[in-house]
Length: 194
Image 1 (cartoon, rainbow, N blue to C red):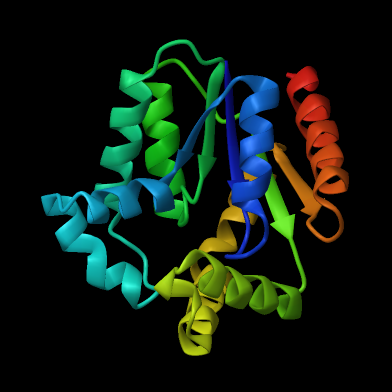
Image 2 (cartoon, helix red, strand yellow):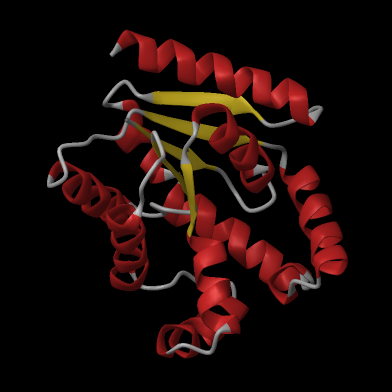
């Protein structure tokens, strides 16, 4: 059973690469962004609670996202593991995920860190905001806020996981298939070692 975390700033290609990873390794793709947007579109209590937080580019509370993740893990059947996209975002969430998995006799196998130059991130996010109609990607102020939050709050996760020897830095520049080849190599190398 694989447990793979994909981490990277907004616009680094996590969503695109996650689809390829989930197909190749038969994983359930757990995207907290998708989960939260679904909650908002369905008008659930959780959706109403997080709508303003997401619109401003800030992070949703640990309790809400951890609850969504736990529910998805417990309801899954037929997959060979899970791909965590957008979670964990903080060291506290990483510890919550590790605890959640430990209670289910699982561990995190690999952390994929998508690395993309800032100018390219802004270009990708701006284009996605217009094309996909995502308000969280249409304002340069919100984009910069999201990138700063990632740098200050989420980047410390890299050292947390690297200390465990399960961290793989992925060059996220180039063609989709080239990036995916790097990801496959990293997953296969780390997971074979275990």
